[in-house]
Image (tube, rainbow, N blue to C red):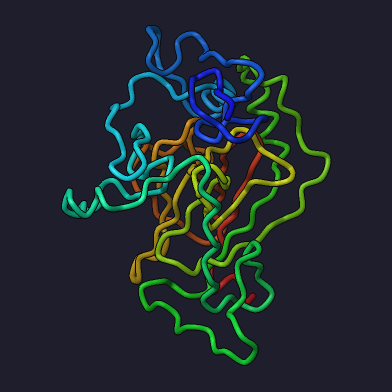
Length: 278
């Protein structure tokens, strides 16, 4: 088990399983950044400054009752627990198994009726031959999906912001589009972590790897009336919707064609059932 420059235990040797920091070299927040005198960076400037930075100062310090990770937003970065939801009694929480570094990856969730031609990012099949898929959840708006790819213009903006490690992050020469059907009430966006048993529904592990994406970076949340919204639970580098960085912990409604930027070069485009019929 290796320790990253921020002191987290990590089973991976390239990037920390907890904070995403590059293992072989510590990063520093740029002067005037979050938690330092002189102001707070936003948007692409903050993304460039924090691509390989450790957890920023100023977070609450509250520990997740399930896995013990330090809280930095609504959803636990370590195990994905919704920390704003009602917690079970202390006796029940104590009986819940802790996520250990040796824990195997969680099994991907079964697909609940993907739209024809829409990939689910390698989700499990329905089961035995001839078995019918489960009935769709009425609380999940049907026909929505997202496509993840690389955006050169966004990368150039991030690289040009002059973060301490911006020059070390290169734009991928090839990044195939990956499409994910939105089939659950909560669809987590991030990178899987074998050591923490975390497998987000929208897994952007790669290749190619965008090192600016947190293990739990953002969450898409369903509403049967309003449709889908996106929330940043407190990611290291922030989430940008249609060119504007969204506040931590505040759901932002999504519409057909909305563009979500995260990491150093990743673009996620939202599609609704209406757009699929065109």
